[in-house]
Image (cartoon, rainbow over all chains, first blue to last red; front, side, top):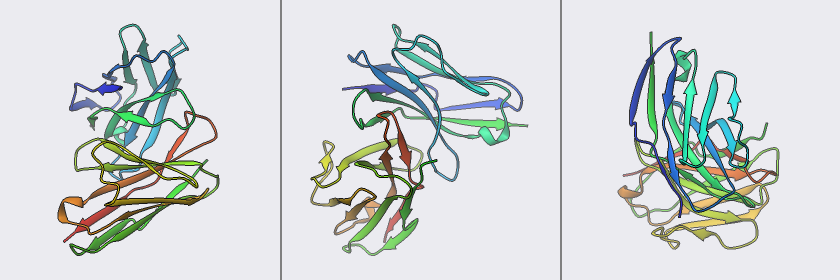
Length: 115
Length: 115
């Protein structure tokens, strides 16, 4: 079974600053996907970024980038130029490669962006 | 983009009654849908995987007779909470698998309150 660990329950960052959210996972699989999801107060789950395990290059999406360390089973999310709208719960998630495979979520990190 | 809806968004029911939650993929066909449960300030916990035309696969510890799942068409899955009790009060989220294995599209969630 896969496990996903997020060791930072809460974090705070000032607007325009950079923040990094940590995530580690444990799996015996070699092919998988890793995700960061954002859940704002509306509670709608929003995909932030996806990383395929077979790709060595770290994924980036505008202000969001990841540091994927496969050997260390680490998958951190960096948010640059933080905005007030980034305030949300952030969940790291794991998906085994396959047809319609289920997601395993971490416990989440609550990010507060302040003025 | 792919849209998933849930109905109702909020439901209050009395203890001992049953309540049905619908999950629809509005602009795509979803062979597989997932049902999650989220308690306040906690992560999403997968309850079951719903496959069109077949029985749902429940996660360990989830009572299949209490949480009835039906996936009768490629665009609709339903979750029925039978004989609801206050401890069933929670936020229920569905997701639908897209055409690519890594794609999952989340509904906006349903808040269930059992009095």
